[in-house]
Every structure is written in structure tokens, then in C-alpha cells.
Amino acid sequence: MSLRLLSLLCLLLLSEASLTQESGTAKGPEVPDTCPVTKAADHSFVPPYPYPAKTISGGSWFGTDRLWIALPEGGIWRAADFSSADSSSGKRRKWWRYAKVSWWRQGYDWHVDGAPKLKVTGRRLDSTAPPLIAEKAEPVGVTFPKAYMMDSLDFPTLGCWEITGRYENDELTFVVWVAEATSQREQWTELRKDLLARAKNGDARAESWLGSGYEQGWFGRADFPEALEWFRRAAAHGNPDAQNSLGQMYEDGEGVQRDYVQAAQWYRKAAENVPDRGGAGQGRMNLGLLYMQGLGVPKDYVQAYMWFSLSNSEANLSDAKAQMTSAQVLEAERMATEWKIRYSEQ
Image 1 (cartoon, helix red, strand yellow):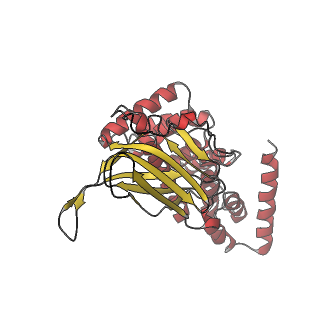
Image 2 (cartoon, rainbow, N blue to C red):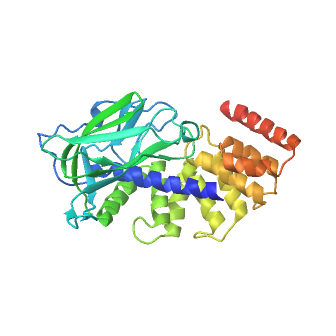
């Protein structure tokens, strides 16, 4: 089950990274005229297909198809105070962390490319300050086109900062105003208001994120009935993330009686979304796991192998293959090929 848990973690990291990165639209300090913040909306960049054309919660994409990032409309990054005592001198060191910065690159796949070769640097423009410190970037997501890179940036001071990301021969530079973050509770309150406004207009992604927020307890305590309500709305609008999340709630018995048959049905709905975006790949992998164990569906290694193949789940593929004959493996691979042909024509 380790790979399934990894996917859940990746989904949570994705939500936290994207929502934190785009929270600069909330009320807060104004940017002084002396800081030439990058207005992403002025540059009209749309990521190449099949990457999402819109960001998750406000803000705009900025960059090129070689390297891009989501920037807030106001050009403000709100960093949390992470001041601490220096272990060697005992003196208190002031610094601010802007956590979980997501970087995207066309075709990046950590199974193929390995650890991100992303290097991030920064300098303050409006005053003298030591350079920022960037943590080593980590891969997030399972495979293309869901995979991206994430790091955290530590600023020695607040103010006007020029940030440069480099990946091999590609470079992306932008300017942000780094301000002190409001409390986490205030951030989640603002986020909930924003998502509710979008959901009322039928935005399936906002409905799905509300479901995640209530399930994970982002807005206070976890509220499974409310999570189910928002997931069902988003699922009815065809959102594969919500369909996969409903499957997980039925499999785990969160807010409902555990029901593997219902879990399998929702995983299948997510799995049949083409192209593979977000919950579609997770739904395929989770459906394969149910076939491996015979939960809600007949135990069938051929079916499991097919779904693992369609989700590029190498570890689970190996587990299934160990239980199969050569003829069964060939049959599963034939089924996967036919599935791709059939659904690519729709």
C-alpha cells in the first residue's frame, strides 16, 4: 500500500503548495512603487497541454514551457516567521520561510529525470541583505504530466526580492514583495471564502478543494459529511480528483460505512477520465490495488496489472507480476494497449 499512500501525500502537498503560493491575493500590505513586482497576468502565459490552464486558487502562471510558476496577482509572498536561536552563538536569528514553492517544467518525470536539477537564488533589490537560502528541490507527483518540483525559500529579511530559478540551461526570473504572513487560521479562513465563492459558480476544482479541506481539517476540525457533500458535487461535474477522493472515503469508511464496492465504482469513474489528470491516475492505481486484494471486485491479477500499467505504477506492477504467469502478463499488456486505443479515440 506504500505507493497509494505516497499518492495521497503528493495530493496533500500539492494542495498546500498551490494554495500557499497563490494566497498573495488576500488583503495585506501594499507593494511600494519602488518594488517592480512581476505581474504574471500581464504576460499571458498558458502552460502547454495537458498541464492545467488555470491555477488552483487565483493568481496566474508565469514563465515559459521550459520552466513556470504560479504567482499571486498582487505580487506578494507572505512568509512565516521562522526565527530561531543559532546553535553555535546562541543569538536569535531572524528569518522568514516561504514554504512549498512549486515549479513546473514540460515533460518533467522524476522516474526518468531523477531528482530535480533546479537551483534557486535570490537577491534583495531595495536594500542590502544576505542571499536567500533555498532548500533542495524535491519531486512531487507520480509521473508526467502530474509531476512537478517543490522547494522552500528562507529569507533573511522581508522586502523586495528578485528570485531566479535555473534548470539546466533554462532560467526564470521574477520579482516579489516578501511580507510577513498572517496567522495560519486567517489564511485558511480567506481560502475557504475564496473557494466557496468559486464553488457557487459551479467551479468543480473549487468544489473538490473544499472537499479536501473539510476532510483534512484545514478549516478547523475534520468534517466528513461536509467533505462528502463537496466531493459529490465535484464528482457530478466530472472532476477525477473528487471521484478518486470519494473512492478513498468509501474504502476507509470516512463519514460513510466502509463499502469496497462503492470504492471500486468511484475509482473506476476517476480512472476512465482521459487524459490522465490528477485523480485519474490515482483512481487507476487504487482500482488496481482493489483487484490485487479482491476487495469490492473479484481478485484478478490481470486486471490489477492492466490498471497499474495505465497509472505507471512500477512498484505495484512488480508486485502483480510476481503473482502471474507469462501468459497472464502478455494478456494484461494487450488489455492495457487496447484500453489506451479505445479511450484515446473518445
